[in-house]
Image (cartoon, rainbow over all chains, first blue to last red; front, side, top):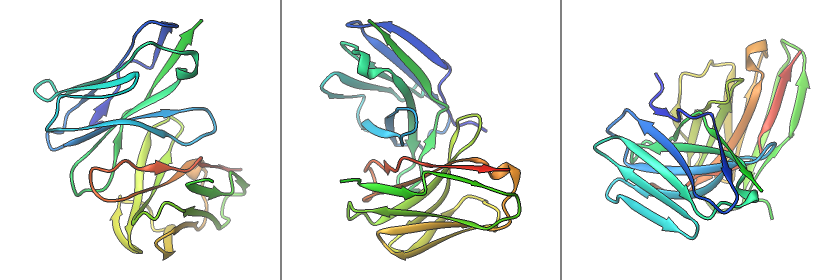
Length: 112
Length: 112
């Protein structure tokens, strides 16, 4: 039972354009959402998070949007840079549960 | 200054052997975790410890035994290794709720 889904296994974007990565979840108890970035042979690196009381959180080039009614969140990267090429994981948590439920990841490739 | 460090990075061993993976964090976090990333790239929680006490055990076979000598360390012992144990194991740590988890670079375990 996959509670967090990233339906696009890969995404290719031109350098300088906007990258939009999507994530859907099924468990309405989730109240904290995170995006991680992962390079090969390294662990996931935390990028940005959002709690369920907000619908947007911005940090530099990265913005996360949360649509609770649609159980959907997205990560916007603008402008996209070659160093953004990596696998991006969406994750969700229920407060107090102290465990992350991950999506299966989307491989983002930024083309020069 | 590695925040979450795991050793070894690679572990190749025979079926039936017993092995250990070590994890240390220097972030002063109270909670530590073990995740398994399988061949399909899903990251799934195995265990979490808070101040040396087991909080989560996600129906992991009892051949897997975590041990936390202090809150900065969470080691994973695996007995009687099986082919299906081949995966990448990630250690992580965090401080409190609504705080991101920080991951180590993973240990790639290969069972021959």
